[in-house]
Length: 465
Ligand code: ARG
Figure 1: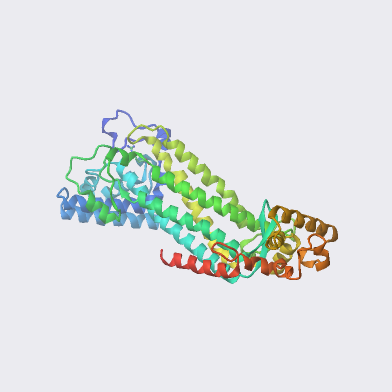
Figure 2 (figure 1 turned 45 degrees about the vertical axis):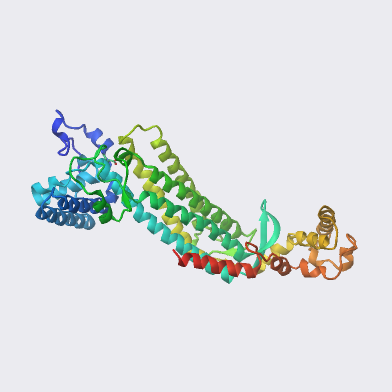
């Protein structure tokens, strides 16, 4: 990377002294926007084709430009391209290299456009590609969860409220709760993609251009749904990036909840799951340790994505129309949000199908927490006792269980009848964990039969993507 004070060839005409070397570095974005080189070239190729179609470039000029840009791309990918801070950003670096390769025709590429609409186009193209990758990772994670949920449809664990044992649920049902969150996350990303997929190119600096451009043609070449409606808005707003960060913040929030449960469950205190060794690390001092680093790290990374959302909202706040240099600051938060959410999803998609349920421990925990107390109350209600009184009766039975170290299902009929004479031998059907989950047999309920049906519907939803 070269770094000297130079007169900028792209806009230096009206300047009487070269840019200060520090200012050049301070205002340059090439260090971070060069990652959009492919999209920048893609946009330029489409722009050159459009300029030729409307008679601004000859077919020869168009072909020279496309060939030159292709060579530039190869140089970049081979690592032989010399990026220059003096050339500020990815756009001017590529244009200068093109001119070096094909001569004066290279200087015609920028006809009828500005870096303002060019960068707005590049970011949208870049984000669109990344949204597609992220959505693929989301789908992969969901596939893993649904497969595991089907396999664990009958596995019983305690369900919690306030992290206190509440009622038995099936592990499959719990896994499908995660899937339901991710399903909405996917829909939010698709919705964001729709609004991002509009072509700003043609807005030029801010007001449009005097050349007879064909924006519909450029939009079609680049796979955009349509050209944007207003040139001032096109070069200035970054709401699509904010929207992406907002959807990403929600994804990370969901993954952090998911992570937290994995961390708890993998602990010696819960012992609900085993994480495969390849997703964990050891301790340099405590030989016995196997730490759930991947979920911990994902939980931790949630903060940076929330931060990027705040950065972008604040970046955009109060900006007057149209383009302001402030907007150059959109890239680092957006790129880091993209990298973080994509890699976190990838780690989870790799790991989720390999979670090992410790069924006996889960069952034992459900057994120990009086998780069928509500079932006993419902049973007494069915015998004609008002729910509030039933609640009191079962409360006393639980107190007795705490004293004697017995679960409700472990008490004898005589013992249970101390609390209500309405209780008879059929009570044991509802006091078992299996009876409890099987009874919640309606759409959205935890019964194994419902879990299997819900998993089938969830798979079908994935197949329709
Ligand atoms: N590097 C700039 C950005 O990221 C490109 C647009 C610059 N436009 C300008 N008129 N200085 O926003």
